[in-house]
Amino acid sequence: MTVETFQVVDNPQVSEVYAGRLVGSAFDGSAVHLTFGSLRSMDGKSDSAKVYVTTRLALSLQAANELVRHLTQMGQALAQDRTQKPGANLI
Image (cartoon, rainbow, N blue to C red; front, top):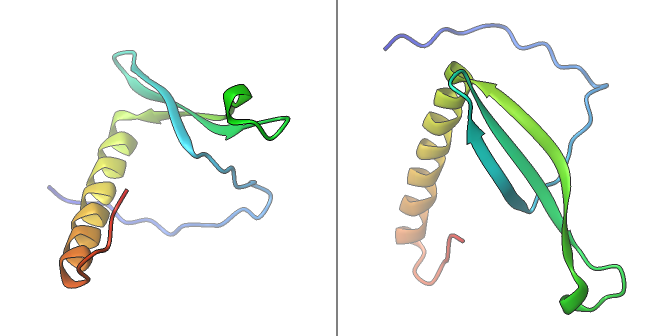
């Protein structure tokens, strides 16, 4: 498979969003839809914590495949690093 390369132009106006949880995912036949959230407790008690949606992301099939490929490579690198550092946990 040939991987196309393009020049990436950064847009500093695009904000970063933190997500500590994957809330949901769906495939509609043409795109992968991911919903991410963050766990928050308004009063500091864990029994009242809720996951608030922080972002939704829709990926074309090509972008979803690229994401899977990159995450697989990252996971393999982390696993290899973990075997070199006994006692290290991934997740």
